[in-house]
Image (tube, rainbow, N blue to C red; front, side, top):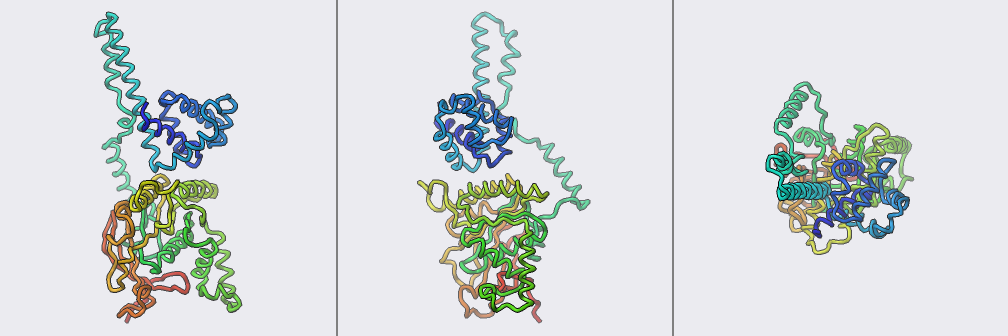
Length: 441
């Protein structure tokens, strides 16, 4: 048996045993049968997963109970083997590809068996006409992957329906960021898109992404904010400062607050406490984010909301499961961006990731460029939108015409619209926020 096929089987089983993607488990149980697996122990585990799914939630612990009930836990290798499969599943960002590989192999094996039976029948003296239908059926069967190929007619009809919805104003608007010029250009952020907010150190990536987070929460859209650099308390403090229009330094010395400021802070705290927002400071890998996002999506669904935005602050602080191994840093970051892009598509949500520019790009007199993104060209390739932030005073406070309260947004890439558009925002660093720019006279 093929080593690659055995690995695919372990990845598929491990992904189901994780229990963080019920949709994947349901789809896989509908596409595969125990006979599709080449390893007997894998067939036993798959059967146990199917039985478990009939009665409740599928995860490592519940499937182990099913295996113990049928006295087959030791046969498949026990907890250690199942846990190892779960760990192996994190090496793949596209487990559905492995499902298709297993299904195709099973279809090919079934076709081969059918042809072999037909040959045996011919050798036994049966005429060709008797076996013709049997042979045609075996040769005409398509692979599982081919069966999933979409129809161009169906796709055209779906697009026509979309045009009709647009004509009647029935298409849901994209996610608003609250940055008016950016929203005008992008028409809102679309589900499944990966948006990279790039900037040099200290230019305001977190402030920008928190601006967008606050707007989404005001619009009652669920948000998962993955904070890799700051604590939850620091993020909440920034949100309170922005919402209450009270300087950060005063929140750190609350004895300086007057009655009006206390009232605004109290109001902001009450507002923020009701937001559909999850601040995740534990996730360190794309797999961690996937689990957190799945949990957030389920929790939001209970209150009739949707997970519309995942923010990763920021990309270069992510780690790989089990270490980088033989990958170089560019390959590793590329895996992060592909994983986040796939996650957004699977959950039908916007993923926004902060990213740094190379230190060599820190010239305050020059606007940043795509080729200055730090550590990987995959950031550019996988992103639907790349928004660069430029704030010269964050690099050199003595810069010519620019003022300390300005930040420039430059759309370096826009897969579905105009790129190279540039706009200004008013910078309020002391309030951890930005605003529409004041018109100059």
